[in-house]
Length: 144
Image 1 (cartoon, rainbow, N blue to C red):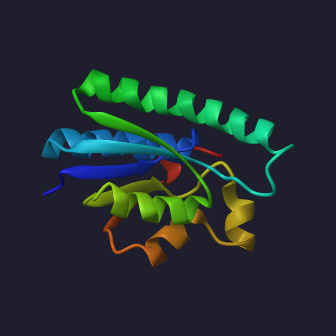
Image 2 (image 1 turned 45 degrees about the vertical axis):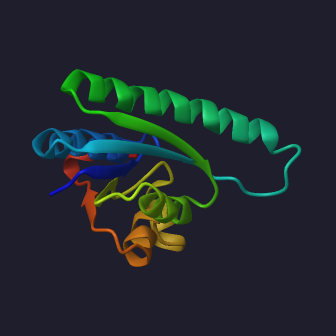
């Protein structure tokens, strides 16, 4: 049913829960996982380069964790770092990697305040994509 699954990750508790869930699905269906970290790149280049580089370092660490989880469970994981607006990059990645399913957490690093003001990345992805999307969250994710 699922051959390629995208899991956008950011190191938050909800993202970690989504990664665990995607591994269960990948094991069950023999699917490959595309783990994606999006560096939110805002503002002009120059003095922002340091911030972007630091985010990329964090992204690589988070991707290492997901790849190790895949290794433990015998799941093939491809790692991706993209720059841009997270919701747009996630939707584009789903198309680019021809995934059958997106699995993502209900909240990321920005937490409730962002949901209350500008809407969440997850909500925007669900609205913008044609790819089936499974949203993972709840009490098991803890506070972000």
